[in-house]
Amino acid sequence: MQSEECTIIKNPEGFLVDSCTGEVVDFENYTSQDYSNLEYYERVSSSKKKETKKEIRDMKKIVLNYLLSVMSDEEKEMFYKILQKIDEKKLDAAYYLAIYEYVLEREGKVVSREYVKFLKGKGLGSYSIRQKKKILRKILREDSVIHFIYNKYSGDKEEALKIYDLLKRKGILYGKHETRKRILLKYLSDQKLKEKLFEEERMKEIERTILLLNIRDFEGFSFI
Image (tube, rainbow, N blue to C red; front, side):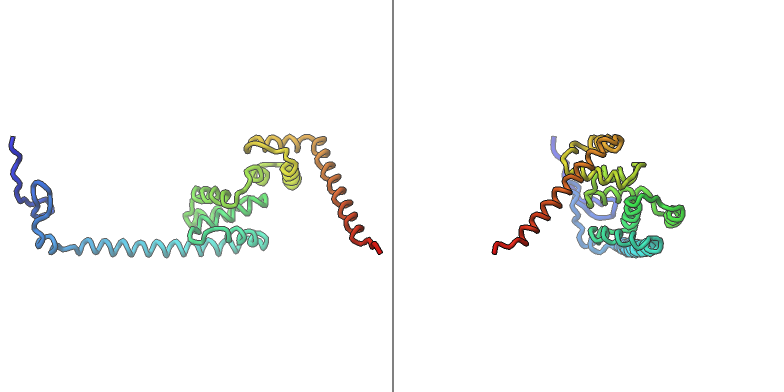
């Protein structure tokens, strides 16, 4: 069976093309086409991109100004410390809000109704803030058990943090989040275990103090 002979045909766009290869052969007609519509859409697209960038910048300013107006001096200090650890190019309104909520969590506080109204009024979704907080915790390398203490533990948070620190230093903690949390809760709920832990720490502190005093006395001793 013989193959079909190649001919010059007009394609749906109005160009003359090779029927076998689809290659445009009417180059003069091809290059003289009016692309004004394409250029128009490119201009519109470029304009929209600029507007979007401006909206993002404006929203960042609005959010930052709002947060600065509601934060205490201590919260601002922590906020800016965290802010310095984030790549400036990645910062957006959701990131600012995530840092603010993280600061509140560390202080055992919850967001106010006014804050929720602010988010709704500006069309800022909680999902994007939650996602940014996940990234934030990875950047700050926060221990998940410490996060549990600050946000979910209903007892004395300061005591829990101190015991958790002692357990880590003594090498009593091991395993993943649930295992470490279980060990911590065991010590928090058992008064004898807590007292033993604190007593051992007090004895170590006394030993360190005696050692320092002995070193000082030795340094002050004259052999003459």
